Amino acid sequence: MYKDYELMEIQTEVLFKIDHLKRITEINESTDLIAPFFFLGRTKEGNVIRFNKTFPDHHKIKIFEVVNNNQNNIELGNLIMNVSKLKQINKIWMGPAYVFPENFNMTSNAIKITNDNKELLRMGFPNLIQHFEKRQPVYAIIQNGIAVSVCCSARKSSRGAEASVETLDSYQGCGYGTSSVIAWANEIRKAALYPLYSTAWDNFSSQTIAKKLNLYKYGVDLHIS
Image (cartoon, rainbow, N blue to C red):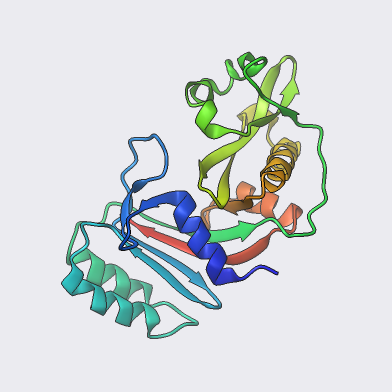
């Protein structure tokens, strides 16, 4: 049976590169994205907190006080105010974190994209070809000879992988995203990894997929950059 706190710790390993002091050093992928200054993963079993390596040690106690003051409701305004005293905040990202249930048994007609057929991505998802090996496994729905919906690994660790799903605008609303995610998750499970799926609160199409697949919500992520 899943333990929410452990799943959240696994997700931090998937999302970020963490040093021996459990500080965030960088994003766990080849990207120009800047690692968050502060990360909070809230679960019903407790909070997983990760500070950026540049976060001043003397200010961490105050952050712990704000976060742990009320396990049921975070004082978000107070937290943001305290973080903003140390660094100008440019972005706040928040949303639910899911994992595929242990008894997940759905199947789909998505096909695996390999080096032999990755040209199917060329028209709709050219950037994926550039980082193809690091995004494995990659599954797609094919229509009219091209990939129209793709699910791949956004980031991976030795214990889990985070899904990334995208569907071309003209093919949305057909269930293709859901089908590609199903195939990706099944292969991740075969590799003995936790298939994770997180999204922003305002990404309603992504949350619809999570609902269709009856994914288990183990917590909520907060990134402050």
